[in-house]
Amino acid sequence: MDNEFPNFAALRAAKIENVDYRIVVRRGARTGSAIVMAPHGGKIEPRTSLIAETIAGADLDMYCFEGLMLESNRELHVTSRNFDEESALELLRTKSTVVAIHGRQDRDDPSTVYLGGKDAALVSEIAGRLQEAGFQTKRDNHPFPGIQDSNIVNRGLTGKGAQLEVPFSLRRRLGTEPELLEKFCTAVRNAIETFDAINGARSPIMF
Image 1 (cartoon, rainbow, N blue to C red):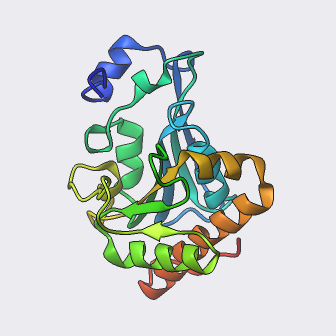
Image 2 (cartoon, rainbow, N blue to C red):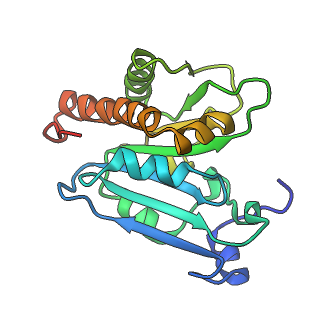
């Protein structure tokens, strides 16, 4: 997008916090090594905040940057490789398991979740859990590899994370079908728990 802000400082200089956008940080009851993020939440990439909040539940830490404007919220999109909002970076300095939720256009594929990020093991675990739950996933040969070191999802303690690009049509269904939302988010949550348990980062948490 030609009109994207190059970084958060430029956005903050042009927009008003809690009027045009807001930053939501929620500490989980069992705050630890994992965080779920929606860096383009609210009205920027609709329903990504809902998905992140549902995955995090009451236990995991959550971060959302949300657009609040009446229109043209895509103006608030700071691309993931340039997303440097300080409270997000501060949180990430304490996290070894990072999952970012994004929204993509359907194009010719309204169902498949494109998975990216540098943490191949976490991406694999999420892909497997989503497929078991009946969702389609794709890990390679799509436009959102998410492998840049500067990508917000790769800026945790380990320098790697997993991002999900959820198509618009699926996000719309997740926003209107509570059972489908629960199935989707439980799959991702279970992947996070399993990954953390294998890596000894935290004890399993009940969803």
